[in-house]
Structures are given as structure tokens and as C-alpha cells.
Length: 126
Image 1 (cartoon, rainbow, N blue to C red):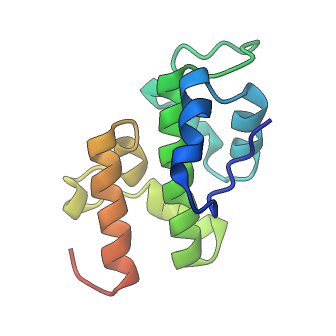
Image 2 (cartoon, rainbow, N blue to C red):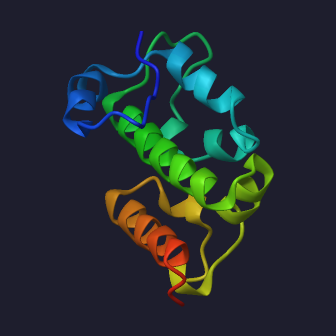
């Protein structure tokens, strides 16, 4: 089973896992480590995820990895899970008056959020 170890130097190692779908256990373990599980499961990428599903679709797996990457970066920046949760569900003018979490179901949205995080890390106003 794959754990979402985001300190892996080579993100290309995730590709086969995404194509085959992350296990449901991987998904559940990630959610249990956050304080925003209910908000994450409301994203459209997880709409068709049955309770008894053994694995996620490739699309849902890709979305989960995007969320996990942003979550890890935000945790490094903010330091506390509660602060990360607040940031991820707070609308931002620099993100088109959307929350970071709302944008993470697309690659373009991920790029916007990731760049916003980098700006915050370096103290650059959006």
C-alpha cells in the first residue's frame, strides 16, 4: 500500500499509483490526518466514490495527490493543522474569490493555489 509520502524526491514514482488508483485505505488515512475531511469529500472528484470502493479512480487519485501536496506545503508554512484548514476553506481575492480547496480539483487550479502558497512563503503580496 502507498502512503502519501510527499517528501519523496521523485514525484514521477506516483504516476503508476495514480493510473491504477490509490487504495481506499490511502485515501481514508489521508483524510483522518486532516481537519477538513468533510470539505475534501465534497469535491466533485470524489462524487462517485462508493463507500465500499477498494480504490479511487485515476482522476480522484490525481486530485488527492494535488490536495496532499498543497496540504503538506501549507502545513510547513502555517505550522498547525487548524490554520491550514482555515486557509484552505477561506475565500481569497487572489484566487478569484474562491477557496484554495475549491480549486484543487483541476490542474490549473492546483497551479494557482501552489503559486499562491509560494508567494505567501516568500512574503510576496498576491
